[in-house]
Length: 260
Image 1 (tube, rainbow, N blue to C red):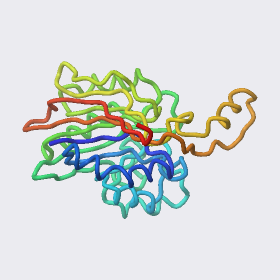
Image 2: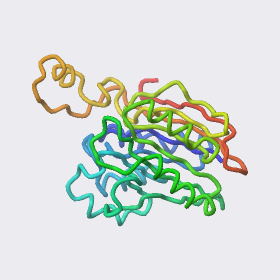
Image 3: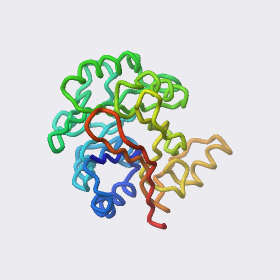
């Protein structure tokens, strides 16, 4: 079984790219399941039911979220209706939405969940390490494989999570910083790991946002809107291959762009 995981989808350009390209990529690479982070899908900040359904219609099977989960005003009233979307598991239990997903493909059950990091991150959340351990324990008897996302600012926190779950899950991957890392590998306990998958959006940008607006914000410090960029759009992520047993046979970083 081949599972494709995509980094943060940024705005309309990212959504359009998936709608135009994902089905052909899936068929050409014989991919069985696609998971994507959608927390920046609506205007570059947050997600709505409409944009979530657009992403699912493009061929994504499950959507994870991050620290911008509640940026769109009405999404807290919509998330419970979205059966293939999960919010970060270490948010307070009173938050709406699912804290995990179990996806069934060809009688193979894959568990998916996200935890938010706590270093340099805004939301007040429970310990991501304790939350991850608890969910893995709760899910291991009902799944054939578990995929864990850590949505975090620092590489050190992401790497620590990889080692924390090594030998217990199939894959630990990081999101949030929108720049893919070159450290994808199989850890000594058998778990696949990559610190950040990058993004599905514009590479001619600053993390998916307009270059001039972001640049001048750094230069003069004045507040200004940074609209979603539209040049050189593509998708970044990783592809793992699973067989019987929870550990992947391989991990490969993936990237396709409209200008390649």
